Image (cartoon, rainbow over all chains, first blue to last red):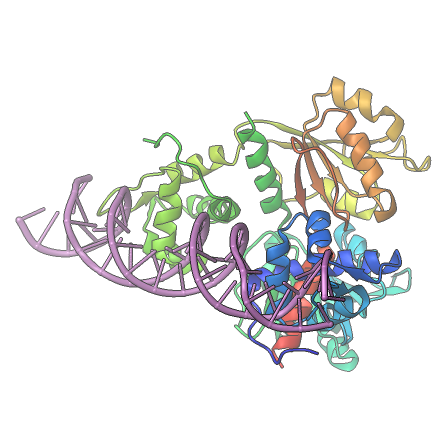
Amino acid sequence: MRKNSKKVSMSVIRRLPKYYRFLTDLNERGFQKISSMELSKMMGLTASQIRQDLNSFGAYGQQGYGYRVQELKDVIHDLLGLNRPYRCVIIGAGNLGHAISHYEGFRNEGIWIRAMFDIDSEKVGQTHDGVPIFHMDYLDEYVKENMINIAILCVPRAIGQSVANQVVRTGIKGIMNFVPIDLTLPDDVMIEDVNISDSLYTLTYMLSRKQ
Amino acid sequence: MRKNSKKVSMSVIRRLPKYYRFLTDLNERGFQKISSMELSKMMGLTASQIRQDLNSFGAYGQQGYGYRVQELKDVIHDLLGLNRPYRCVIIGAGNLGHAISHYEGFRNEGIWIRAMFDIDSEKVGQTHDGVPIFHMDYLDEYVKENMINIAILCVPRAIGQSVANQVVRTGIKGIMNFVPIDLTLPDDVMIEDVNISDSLYTLTYMLSRKQ
DNA sequence: TAGATTGTTAATCGATTAACAATC
DNA sequence: TAGATTGTTAATCGATTAACAATC
């Protein structure tokens, strides 16, 4: 029973993965139902906010009962777009690239790391845990033949923008960017930045404020 | 000329590293001054928001002139707490740990990666680019002797919480958490989460919405 | 001085919290 | 039914944008 979409705000979207994580966990632990009150204690949000959030995309609970864990988890799963396959390539086969290629957070969610790309002739040709490393020259062809829809950027800062341009030219519309720069790209390309130094500076701010 | 602190909101804090990045770049390129208008075009914010943000911590510009790049950069540098040294250890010497230990975003900002810790006897004892790997048993002693103030968690999910507890017992008050779980820790410990799967799910959401 | 651009107040917009009637 | 807990409206709070007087 889903309401036909009012628009879900970005603040809610950013909380969805967290809801999803907690619901998955509850589900695995065998919980059938959960109230906004119980969930609020676990997640550190207010019960009121949880009800507003869930209502904003019409994931109805049941008055006097609560939310069915499995059902709510499934609704959020689909809302996050996880009912489609994502075929990813990693650009840059350094330590970060390798770390992402083995990342345990992705398994079982239709996120497939298919290949890595680099220009280092020592790396090209190798395979790690079933993920082959190809030369950048082969990127365009590979992306088209394998219907790749996400590129994960793990290259040095100096070449970040130009590699991003190269990725965009293949037709890829989703980029996860680990390079600590602000990419300038066409509006129809979705970028999600993971800026490790920005995050660390938020931490140093907090540490320097606490007396 | 700094106003003695109205409180800076968290929304502003999260934008500070970005301001810092752009100002550092402008400074390196030899710019002396910048107006809120010019900065707004570069950064994709409104000029009004920029003036509000900068004013919230009293980084005054000059009417009719703009902001002095070097001065503004320095003020934000200090506000982020980067005028103090941060001595970090990485917990977990896998690919991610190694990636962070070489991370180019940190250099020249008083962020020092001093050591890595692991329990794998094949890794313990090695040194990579001057960063030694020690056994976890030695963590407490090392932290105390070397005045470590930040721990960067790069361990498998299954042991994330228990390793975090171990870190907290050493007295460390700042944790950067790469483990895709929600840590439960005392309130006086500052946590900055970098949740790679959460970020990716935001991207899959955006990709699935754009038809 | 005149022009430019800030600092700051007021208006708007959006997100969170509170409250409670609806209902399972 | 009575109790519990949602869905939803209203109130509050905070963040962003607009506007303009102050001033370099």
